[in-house]
Amino acid sequence: MTDLPKNRFKAALAAMQLQRGLWCQIQDPLAVEMLAGEGFDWMLFDTEHSPMDALTVLPLLQAVAPYPVSAIVRPGSLNVAEIKKILDTGAQTILVPMVQNAEEAALAVASVTYPPEGIRGVAGATRAAGFGRIKGYHRRASEEICLLVQVETREALDHIEAIAAVPGVDGIFVGPADLAASLGHPGEATHPDVRAAVVDAIRRIRAAGKPPGILTMDPVLFEAAVEAGAVFVSRDLDLLALRKGLSTGT
View 1 (cartoon, rainbow, N blue to C red):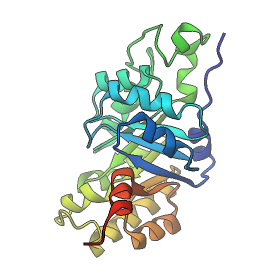
View 2: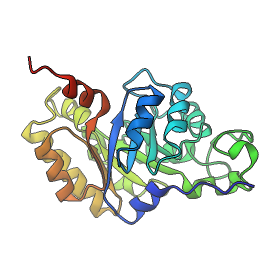
View 3: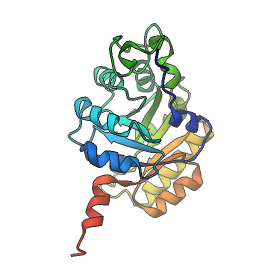
View 4: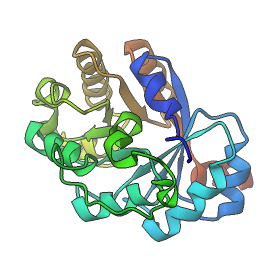
């Protein structure tokens, strides 16, 4: 029988160990495999703001599997059926966008958890279950599944402590772009008010006992976020890194 794969990322977050990663929208397995060897702790495959879906994420999970990097998948929304499909492909860490309150956080937890505690649909011959080779997978899956939720609106900021208190939430990500729009500064994620709100949110998440996360290309905000206690962090996105690398400067 096959052992249940260990989730190194979940263990690192529980120990509040800084984890540096890369946000990914390129859905070419060869490019993703190359990036998997670059030394990142994690790579996130984003189906919310890219053409990716569960079908196109699968070969990316396969491409990074031989490397010591943890894969995270962001579904398009808090959609129970979509999350189920992503989990069945073998993703062990899920980042659910636009979680507004404790009730939505609880639904996210239920979506990644088998009955009787949750509502994840049961199937046996999935990649996640080692195609049926992992003994006791359905009883033990939650041990290695890591659930991250995003707070990225003014409403969500008001409920950070309540969201953090939901059992089964392993980390909370602060989304500067959507938060900027919610605070009245669309497209201005570097606005001083947005920076201040993000840093305050990270401090509150950490004070609530959960590891905070962030993606920002703003070096000022990135350093402030790490200083405030952010644990899973990214300062680049693969498409933007490619564009910068090929830029002629004109």
